Length: 375
Image (cartoon, rainbow, N blue to C red):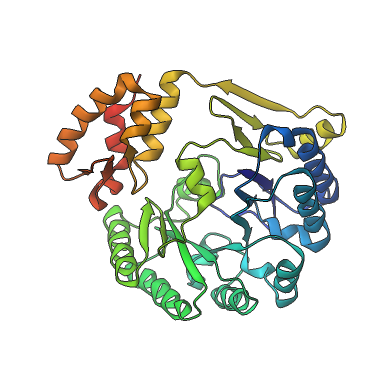
């Protein structure tokens, strides 16, 4: 698994806590630094099954620089077993010409489009640069360009969002399903991170969020909609048609090793977690000197167990009994005993090979995990 972080955006969204910057005067130097880091670190992973360009907004780089980075991936990594290559994109970048270039000159076979909402009031409330019409047009153009594996992001609980406006979102998605290309929906409940623009707006009283009951009603509406259209909830916030789940993101939830390159990107080798510092200048200058600025930590056995439990219980597959017995044999009996109570509460279903959350249990995944965590 390879993750490449492109931190550039047209402008900062009010809710965003990821490492990203508006503008891009140093974008050419950053692209060179990415290519150099890949040269320096390509030996840390073997044959790649998935590649993911995230951000920020990767498509903000434009064809020339993006092509430069793609060429470096092809040069330094074994792509013979590549199953999925995703690039995140915002609607305003997905012109017909750019989509045609993506199809002809890159290996991407999956687009993740940052729609967030198909309602203009919602988009203005979070400082998105596109409008609803552009979002619909981007999905239609991507399908027409030949992309058959499209994912869209939506957010529930936005400032001023109502149950009626949320239904309008799902009604628009209904119209797009007829294209045959939309296979995946990532739908997140808005979280307010300390220090974001939205955090400051809420503290000043400039905006208000919907009541918890209203957001819960939106989520229930989403679950009903997905079930009736054949979208399976395979993770708390992710829904896909059969066979079209995100293989890359599933790798994170399955605790698989991955390499992350770019400012702010994280890597994991099965025991050690490493993160490049989220500082563009320090990253670019450091790579130019052959020294990547980063931090790291070696996870303890308890840390690894806790992460295994937390990620597994966020997925419909749940805790694999064989994996648990192999990696954490001393925990198997304790987990099995704790799951008995969760079964009586209707939160866990036990199969021959797993303890998996029920639909009700997925909503309470963090609470179930808290029962099992090691101090």
